[in-house]
Length: 277
Image 1 (cartoon, rainbow, N blue to C red):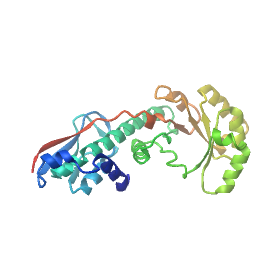
Image 2 (cartoon, helix red, strand yellow):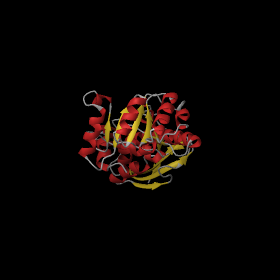
Image 3 (cartoon, helix red, strand yellow):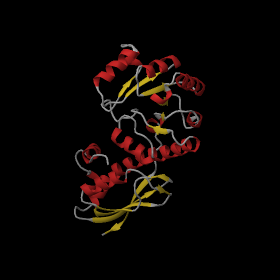
Image 4 (spheres, rainbow, N blue to C red):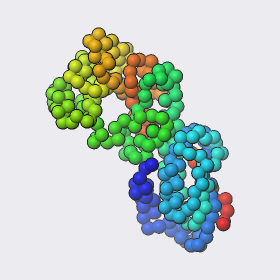
């Protein structure tokens, strides 16, 4: 689950000096019941995060739908009971978290299913194209995808701007000497550089912004040299929900796309007060 401290930062941002509307209108000791319902169909996510927030403020939570479950429009996800002001304080933050996470999880599940129908061995991964990393990476996992690197500290990924400063073979050598435990991945944009990276001992070769024909030629060249089985092949760049199946048909291991997090369609969820206690 995303850390409570991280989530409370959203509450602090939303109510830096309290919820003045509720404090003005709602009696301090009033208790209420509420439900959170799905306003669309898809994969629900962020349930545990919402639970943690409400419970932190003393609201009891009954989970009706768990993270990763399919929901339909109108399904009850959570039942809440507790101090009315507390419910209203957390409401928008909880819905925002659930809406974003469910939107990501729903899209990830859709693309994972498309890819697996074509090539069951290929994994779908996100990227670092997000600032809401804790939320987005967990949502990708709930949807059945790979989060990729969580941060720059997780794995070594040698990109074009590194290679503009240090030659490819030297960069891989330095990376291997730096750590025996970190995966070394190299981003390349040509058949020739893919061969160089594989020969130099890269663990993963990312074929960036290469079309399916170029990737097929690269894979054949790697096989001819006996290098294909030594490396994982990731493809990225220019991949969309519309063309992802073209890439999935190839002899690759991972498809990564920023679409999962930088083009999120929010999943509609709503909180409704159903009465006083």
